[in-house]
Image (cartoon, rainbow, N blue to C red; front, side, top):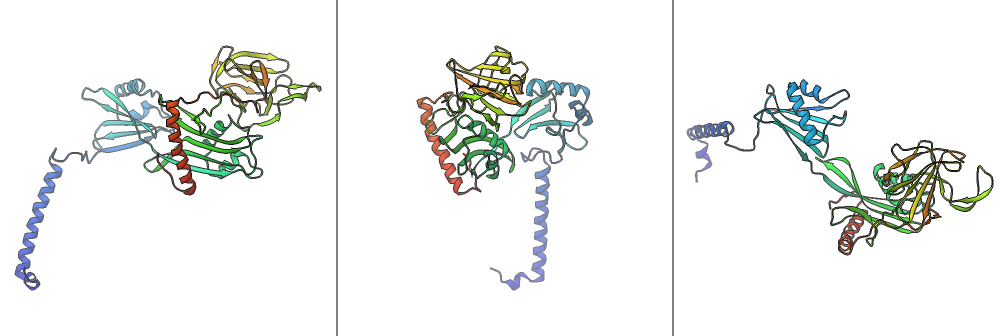
Length: 420
């Protein structure tokens, strides 16, 4: 080994400098060869590729945007046809859709067009050697994070206010409300001290939250006992909500068709009629709502009656199965296309709140008829749509343990999230 004083000798230093310079030259030549010889290194792509991103604004059309990028009218027609046939895109949405135009370099024609109609889907258009435009749809994978929120009803609270205070997004609250409305009367069943919790999804892309996903589990300390609902996907690919034992949690009818509507008159065998002045049975429940409020069907069924009479004013009656019917009265008008014989889905608007017939103000009069007899919508036991078979129930019970464990863990660590 050479000593330090030999290495720093001027003659030796000169030799070392010359040797290092030679090595540097060789390395430089190798770099040039590697980065400029076609096909030597794969995956580098075109380093000069240019991308121009355009956000669709009001007044923009596909034709206008394509022409501005230098495409011909023939290209515009071909692209429009491909988008319609292959991607079901016929129009662009202002302030929503985004388009990327890709060129090999600044002066090259457009070689690729990417239309992004949602954060989870994009349509890629490329032009082949024959000038034919082709498209393919690419689904963008979601980064799904499961979060947990819990809260408590305080004096003077509504469920909505308590949920917002707990940090539950408004859209998730609306979904939870729809689920619990099958079991609860939010006008009468909500009391101070009741606790609730929600397990739901948040969808992220590139580290940014895009939107909320599905409600996975709900728990509420209701007056009639704890209500628990879990979302579960069956072996046939369909999903539903089930109680902790695997019984269908979604009932065939809703007790309260209009969300957040206040009850102004309850079901009663003897009630003094506000217009006629004498006592008679009130065979339904009245919900206060402003004129024009949409009235959703309480369950899937078929319209068996639609018309006008002195008492009900404009009314619609739905038959849901061999045992149940519902009636909606005092409508200001009927929903378009909903006539006798029309099949309606649960939640579909059948009419709009009004004050027709014997009524003192705008409201919905709602009736449930079971086996031909009027029953109290707030107390009648409603049948579940479907329960799980033995094979699915076994899988559900195992999955429910996973959701319960997730809620327990996140309940102790509210700032965390999990991925199922």
